[in-house]
Length: 606
Ligand code: M6R
Image (tube, rainbow, N blue to C red; front, side, top):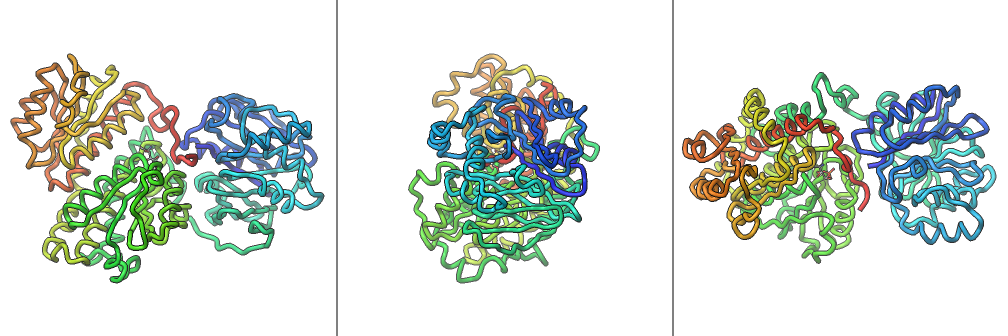
C-alpha cells in the first residue's frame, strides 16, 4: 500500500525521504513522488513506476532543502500515472499533500471546490485535501488551518503536509491509517511505517486517530481534534535496520523462510516458562470462565493461521471456535456479546478490514485480543489484550514467518484456555508442549534439503493452473500453500478438501494438471491414496507431501518427504516446503518475489 515519509531538520530532506521511501518499497506501489521546500516555494517531482524513475528525475536537482514529504502510491482512485501520483499541490501551490487512505466524500468536496473555481489536475481523492487547505488557510495558524480541513473529511487518512505559509513546519494527521513520528536530534520525521525512519532514530510516537502533529526541527507538538495540546508517550523500537535487510539472501522471502526456526523459538520461549504457558498477565481466571464463545478473525494468510487455530481449539481443547474473514465479519451478523472473546490475527496490525471488524466486536461488547507482529500497531493498541509474535520484521509481501508464529500462538492459547477450563489434563498439556519443542530443528533439517523442491519448481513454472488438496488439517494447510503459490507465481491454483474435488472441479483436471496433495494426517492416508488414484486416472501430475510412506511414493509423480511429527504440528513441517515450492517457482519465472504485482504488504484500505 501507499507509503509516506516526511523530514524536517539539519540534514538533507531529499536524501532522507528517498532513503525512507526505498525502505517502504516492500509495501507495494506503482508510482512515487516528493515535495521539497526551498524556503519560499515548493518543488514537486513525481513519476509513475519504480522509485528509481523518481531518483533519476531528481539526479540533477540542485536544491538544498531541509523540509519535505515523499510518497509511494498504490493506486485506488485514478490509474497509476505521473499526474495521479502524490504529492498533490493546492491550486496556488502553497500546500503540498501526501495521503494514505481514502477520502470517501471526495466527490461532493470536489464539486464544491470546482464551483468555487478550483481546477483539479488529477483523478485522485487526495487532491481535494490540497485545495481545501488553500481554501481554509488561516494566517500563521497551521493547526487551525488543518483542523478546519479535517472536519470536512470522511474516510481514512494519514496525511503529510508542507506549506510555503509555514516554511519551518512539517504537518501531519491521522484517522484509520497508520502514521509514526520519529524524534531525532535536530531533526524529526514522519512515516507510515517504522523502517522508513530507522536510519535516523529509534524513538517514535504513534499518532492516534483524530490527532495531529506539528513538527519543527527541534520540536514536536501534538493536538487532539479540538485543537488542545496533548502529550504522548514515546516508544523505543527494539529491532534494527539490519533485521530489516536481506542479510546475504537473494530475497527477503527466502530469508524470512529461513528465519522460521528462530522466530518460533523466540515466540515459544517468550511465552513458555518452566514447561508452563504464561498468559497469566493477559487473562484472569474469571476471564477464562466468562468466555463461552471464541471467534478468530483475520485476512489472507493470517486467516489461514486462524483456521488452524480453530482446529486446535475445537479438537485439542474442546472449545467451539468460529473463524471469519475480517472483511465479512460485519455482514455475517456475528453472535458476539460480552461473553465472547474475539481474536484478531494480523502480522502488520494495520489491516483495515481487520481493524473495522475489531471495532464491530468492541461495539458489541466482546473482549478483543490481538495477535500481531508489530509493536505499537493500530490493532495492538485498539484491542483490549495483545500477544506479540516474535517473528521480527517481515518485509516480503508473502507472509511466511508471521504465519508460523501466529499458528504457534494459537496452539499455545488453545492449550492455555483448554487446561484452565479443565478440558485438557496436565499430562496431555505437557505432552503437547513437549511435542512442539522439536519443531524448529525439524524445520532446520528440511531447509537443508530443498533440492527436490527446486527441481519440481522447474516443472511447475510453465503451468497455468493447478490444485492443492488435503483432508482434515491438511486442507487448512493446502489453503495457505495455495495462496503462497498464487500470489508470487501468478499460477492460478485452487485449494480443495480432497473429497470435494470430485463434486465438480475435477472436470478441470487434464493431462499434466499439477495437483499438490497434502498427506500429513496419518489417520487419513488411505483415503488420500484413493484421491490420488482418481486424479492420476485423469492425467494429473501429482506432487505429494507426506512422511516416509511407500504407498504414497508409488502413486505420486513427485514426493516431497517431510519430517515426522504429530498430526496437529505437521502444519510446520508441511508449510515450509510449500513456501519453498512457491518461492523457487517464482524465481524460476523471474518474478519480483518480494513485491509481486498488484499486492501490498499491509492493506490499509477496505
Ligand atoms: O498484516 P496482516 O496479517 O493483517 O495481513 C493480512 C493479509 O493481507 C496477508 O496475510 C496477505 O494475505 C499476505 N500477503 C499473504 O502472504
